[in-house]
Image 1 (cartoon, one colour):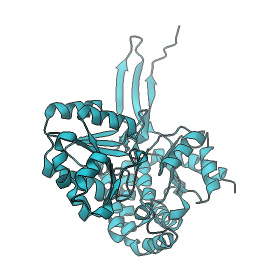
Image 2 (tube, one colour):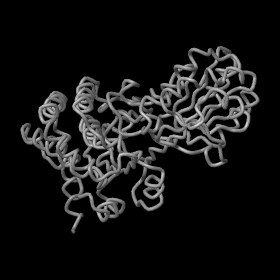
Image 3 (tube, one colour):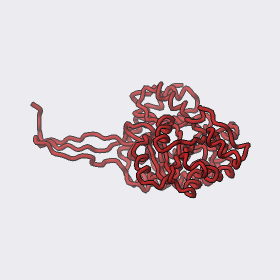
Image 4 (cartoon, helix red, strand yellow):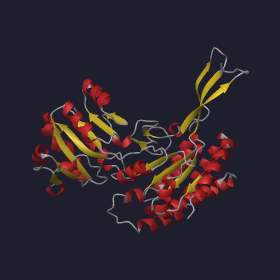
Length: 415
């Protein structure tokens, strides 16, 4: 198949977005929210076809699964995006030089944004909304696991674009076949930036094979450290929420670190997890402290590779640490630089943790489950970047812009 035609049309469509006003942009997003809800039945029918291909025990199953409530949440995110101020056309810098050249630094779209993602059909709508709001064309390559769901959502998007007489190529959904991935990785000159969303293996593959600049949305190997001064009730609620709220997402908790001086509180701290059927992989000291109270069928001895694992399931590593510095060293060794948290009532320790931990999002006395574009007030997110160049953390509207220098003169020439 000749994929070049897709990329050429996307590049051409990016020029047409310049003339789409803010009112039209917001109307499209509002209408799309209504249309997705109105088409819930047909979208769910296609989603069932995808789910039938995947074992229910697969960690990706929950991400793939749609429901009326989840479609309503997607629609609400679209409404939220519509209600946000556009980041385009912002004057980031404004100065007049001695030679009277007037120079402005102005925010502009990135252009054509490519996204490669796995079994996450919500990404189809999320990415479109954020790209459209920021004047970017979206070229999407979803996985075969979610092929029918993605097609159903893209069909609704295209119908809304047609209604508003906007070039439907501003959203391009590539075929689900693997060859489309290879073509997108090599679409230099057509696609301006590429964003992978999915497993660490997918992200690594894209980074190592793309000829287009890549923004990594990395895997989440997430820790929570329970400090010597940690409040037990806060800790129980935070750890339970961070682990069990939705286990298949990248902000889900993977490892609890507990100060050795709170070893006697370990059973109480983790007791709610037993009710959530969470399987623990505990180091020797924590295993000994838990074996009398935690269900035997859910308690295991930790192996070295359990630390530094993104479980994406009801599994959790547990380790006793000597103090804050020991916890910081463990996090520095195993963190994927996504989200890390401390539970503490010691202001000095909290400040040290927040300052020293190298991650996109750091928390004090709150669940890492909040690492999410909508929760951060971004409307939705295109991904959570774990790198440091251009974007870091939940990527919303501003992260989908670049800038250009606008220079106005009165006939100046350079000597």
